[in-house]
Image 1 (cartoon, rainbow, N blue to C red):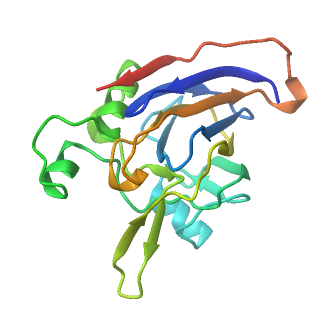
Image 2: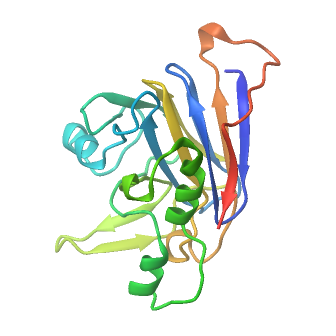
Length: 217
């Protein structure tokens, strides 16, 4: 597939872009063990968003991988996972936020967060902070004990691992390089994003700018 747009996210940052139905989004972990939060909204009506609950209901699993469809809050397909070199992604935890670090880590000092980065990235599209729900946690490795207790383990992704999702509608997409220490095995690394043209309409050399530059907070 032809790369239409590339977006490099430095550690603990985020960005947004628009994607058309049929195009694909490739999210790459270039160094390994780095989580990336992904959220999307329908471009023609941002009251329709990627739904954790609908997707888990219809997939009947908490772990999403190749072949799974990701649904909106209106039960319409938003994404299909077409390639996945890792096989462990989930909707189990919300994007880290200043409150995450205050409540879980006891840290009240300023700290970058996925939520704050998504707020900044989506702002040019008129998407308010309260509209950002639970994100798809790419490369995150959460184990569920029989008791229901969650354990956040190091991501299974290695350098160069990736996931490719095909857009099933026109969307606004936000992506981060996660800022939570525990999620990323104690280190922060970049995330690379590529927007890929549909195979049937490839135009070699064609480039399109991202709708919003990477944002950091």
